[in-house]
Image (tube, rainbow, N blue to C red; front, side, top):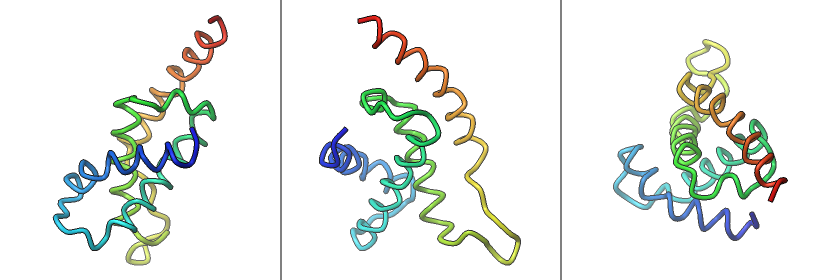
Length: 112
């Protein structure tokens, strides 16, 4: 997926991300997009590099929304001196489900 396609995907998701964050205005759009792009990179590193897998995948979109929410709200590696703040369990569960789906996708893509 080219950089332009990734940005288009994030732009298409922006309204849903803002709904999830309960943000009405456009003041934080640049920060939200940065968080979403970082979320996509996190998923790609955790699951696998073939970007065709990520297109039109509702679980991927949900994981991006959840990670973006996390990155937007927790803008530091620590919070209140309590140490590292990790993404929630729901995001990790989605990643664990996507890993075998990615492996199957690669197998099917290779057999075409």
